[in-house]
Length: 112
Length: 115
Image (cartoon, rainbow over all chains, first blue to last red; front, side):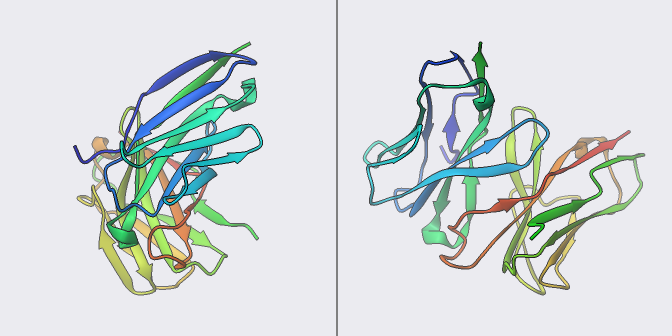
């Protein structure tokens, strides 16, 4: 299909790790992004990965990229209640000549 | 810097009324975008602009018009509002560092209800 696919919901216990998955479509994507949307707010860039990388780590966040399977994941270690939000995956397409394409978002709920 | 701002934050319209949503950015970005967000549908691109005086259609352009008369402003117009246009509207902007592939900066959103 043409969509960027994400599961819609994820629920984890506080202190556990969260893994949010995304599949994308364009093998020539240069950048892949993770955005976070807190309730009532706009999207904010959380992290991104360049397509020639397999992994990127930034404090509690780990991004894994499997280009062969066109699969992107975001792992949040030691998940906190403040991590409850909607997480959007986004890919660049057409070598950057068209706007980013966003997934539908994964709603992460953290249970105390 | 204020970043990306949107006016108004909330609006209620009756079917058939018109209105304009204003987006402003103070980051000197070339590219600007209008999205709508609906439950279960994610973000859908309505229109975008790669520079002053230029606009292009996105995924769901019908029923909307846009104008980019000044680099810092991107206006979204609804000529005859319909209940199907009830949504949360987000504006975003990005610099032209790598075409349209780069990070987008989002405004706080406008919640529009059409009765």
